[in-house]
Every structure is written in C-alpha cells, then in structure tokens.
Image (tube, rainbow, N blue to C red):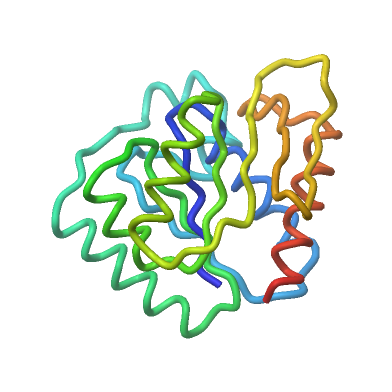
Length: 184
C-alpha cells in the first residue's frame, strides 16, 4: 500500500505521521517506510526537536521537476520492498502533488479546514484510482473526544501539535494504523 497523507497546511499531517511512525516502530509487525514528498523542510526531526531550534534551521524550498521525479522514482522503488509506504504530501493542491499522489494507492485526509476536506477528496479521487481510507477533522482544541469510525472512515483528531499529542489522540492514531495494517 502506498498511502498519501494529504490536507491543507497547518493541519498536523507531519505530527500525525510522526505518531504513526512511532507506533509502527514499536509494533514491528510490517515493513514500512515514511517518505517526505514536500520540500518544506519538515520531518520527524521537526516534531521531536525544540521548536525554537526548528524555526532557526528549517528551510522551505520550492518544488522542482527534479524533486518531483525523485519522489516518484522513490515511491515506485520503495513499494517493491515495503508493505506500507507513507507519503507526507505538501499542503497545497498543486500539479506537483497531483503527480505524486497519482503514484499512490490510498489516501487519508487530515484537515483543520472543514471546507477544504471536500476539495482534497475531489482532488485525490479525480487524479487516480486511489482509495480513501480516512477523513479526519483536525482541531488544536475541542471539547469533543477524538475518534475514528472504520465503517464511515470519518474521524476527529485533537491536539496534533509538535509540543505533544494528547493520549486520547495517540490512541485514535493507533486505531487508524491498525485499520491500515488490516487492509494490507
């Protein structure tokens, strides 16, 4: 499975993937790889480091044809060796993301903007035969409890922040990750 994690900027996609990655490392049930597919300078390091330091050393770059081609080649190669390839996509609907996502088999939307969810869903469905495996509303704070419903594929994530993810949200991410593993 090649799983694209998509959604608008500042929705917590990288933090979400960091949690998935940590859980998969502990679980050690499948072979997986996390591929960054955006030149935004983020990664697990930015979720685990002092945020003041991250601000100082993180550099955002622009997409180039060479970068996009490298990511596509990497995705195709990685999918031959790993059961699950996680793709951390950029937060904008662009031609570059279109090319990258068209090489994926599945996608999940993480969105802090409810209006953007439908836009991302349409974008992903129109460019490839990708299957949607989840749509998460992502809120920094909420009185509502995080959840994931594997029948409707809808969920809520609360507190996807680099400074720490609440235990309830981590448990929902584990539930989602186990759901993904069950699809392999």
